[in-house]
Image (cartoon, rainbow, N blue to C red; front, side, top):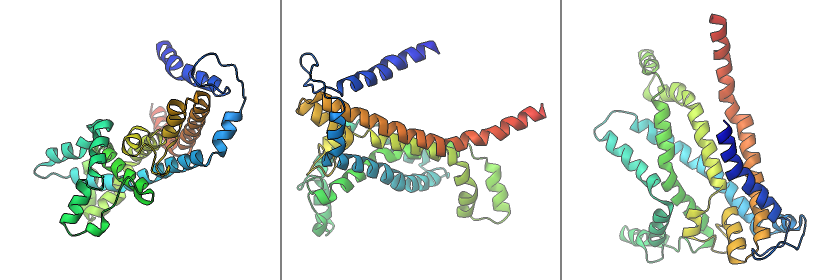
Length: 291
């Protein structure tokens, strides 16, 4: 326990405290920090329309990730859980995008989404050239384009987690439902999906935190553009720190990102994940009584 706490303090607590200290100075990263500005960096960040847009984009991506990937991932997982020729190969194929490095996947999609890239060429080939456009250069579609790439990249993780959860659903329940005349879909809706609740909630938590910290894929595809249409809190603070040398201001943005993530994670833990902990308590009480 002590080594774990020591590592947590070194790699989490100390950097957060350091960032909090930097955030109250106007500092360009060079020389001593002498220009103390108090909470001015926080006020500037919270009143900046670009930062407000980055927060909105992060929350939009978090909501859309769950709304889009959960039904698709659940449907694909249910289909892949059925026995058919090539089942193992299909499971590997759907997981391949997730194991690709973000840099590799981002560069591939950036080339495909260029005006003269593969996506527009494919649309022209099938007679849908009217839909061809600058996918990452048009502010009206850039965020949706990034969302599509993120879905392609991370859907495999949802499918694998749900497949793992499906292995814990007793087959006897499906057999009993089948004997009672339930269809395949009724069996999945009444038995499988409710029993997958803990797995779905855990995946949703990971998806939400990942969406709030999103940086690499957006940075490679659009660098937060065009016209800040895809900027996130992480790309915003990196741009402020490394490109404009406003390390004090960037540290304030980092602290705000930390606080937002901490609050949302706490709320999710309190109102969603605690349901699973609550489900275990009656079982523990029953075990004590049986003893």
